[in-house]
Length: 477
Ligand code: FAD
Ligand code: MLT
Ligand code: ZN
Image 1 (tube, rainbow, N blue to C red):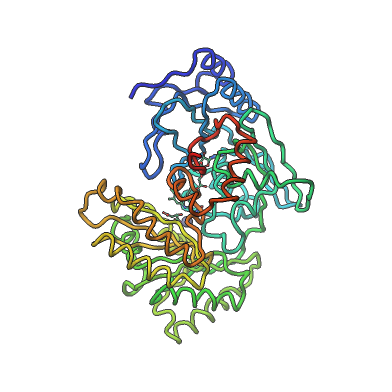
Image 2 (image 1 turned 60 degrees about the vertical axis):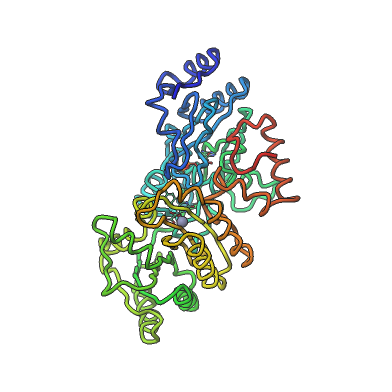
């Protein structure tokens, strides 16, 4: 498709500012920035801008603002909701943060890391780990997703059950607002009640209020003991009862508590090389539990053996395997982390990243399964996710051999059927992936009235020309 050119004066000013490699306009170079990870959205852009620091980013944004050019912030481009993909008009520029990739410092007194937005989560985790510390946020896309994207989406993941979402980890933040002004909130303070919480407003705003350029991230002491087990259970209720059993003994020891349905696990085992189920036989459902502690003693082993031993005796757990080495631990995690990839390989899928109160999870899974099976015979209902947070990825995979496009044409029917059950149970239609462009249509009925109106007022105050990530989060007025 032909490229929509930038106004020549803007193009020249941007090349002078960012250098030729900082302004990509050749469609062969920009194409990958215009398609999302799920390949649901195929947009176009006038250019991809790649600033190397805050100053370049601020000046580039000021130039685009002056020329009325829409801007789409992009980090690792792993959004599940099309949040970082431009629309098909070709007028917008993508602003990629990948060249802003310095880790500035690690502070052992405050346990913080000061880091650029374009550092991948994995690189930041590794830097913390090299200094005996833990960056306590982990998601399967961490090799690509970056700090800016993590904060912009308020990402959750496997360790949220212990440390909270990205929001809880952001002690400080720097962002460039849609007019190019720099908001410097890079304070390292745990206590700071000085006016509105602008930092928290930027976190989770999905690139609609500005571009995050730097952050101060809260770290933790690195675990010196870990115990990881994969358990077979009979049902979601069994998984929740097991969670309660661990929580009763020591909630602070639970580092991760992940649920996988039998259907979802079977897809991983059949579609991912080297992902064999390390248990005697397939089960209706599974839990991956990880305990961790900065203590180096064997108290976690005692805890794990006590809870699992009792659960096996009671029939709550029907089989279990405990990791006896780091490589076995990684093998168990690989099985969990490949769920999204396995579902991608299985064909078209519709993702419902929902949360409900913990007690409602069994009812939710049962009712939503029935509703989807009634809607599309042969559909593969493959839920999994962060059950300790009440967050189920109620993902729906097309019937085997079905036409992918015909299946996806019914995405709203499936999402709405699931959402109505979620609504009845007091949950949310997006627990961690955000709204992006995929779920804007749900905002009026879920967040309408004064809530949506307040969001629109905030957007209009910071971005009156609607230039920053237009079409995301907020539906057209
Ligand atoms: P992008 O995809 O590039 O952007 C995401 C959104 O943030 C867009 O709206 C974009 O405009 C905006 N944005 C990006 N960078 C900035 C910035 N610097 N300033 C302002 N706005 C910005 N998410 C979870 O929460 N938990 C999971 O467990 C999880 N697992 C995943 C597993 C897989 C295999 C994949 C593919 C995705 C998963 N995700 C998960 C979703 C995704 O990885 C997260 O939303 C992640 O935080 C996005 O980071 P990113 O750098 O790729 O952002
Ligand atoms: C995950 O937790 O692996 C992702 O958030 C899930 C998804 O594919 O929906
Ligand atoms: Zn997830």
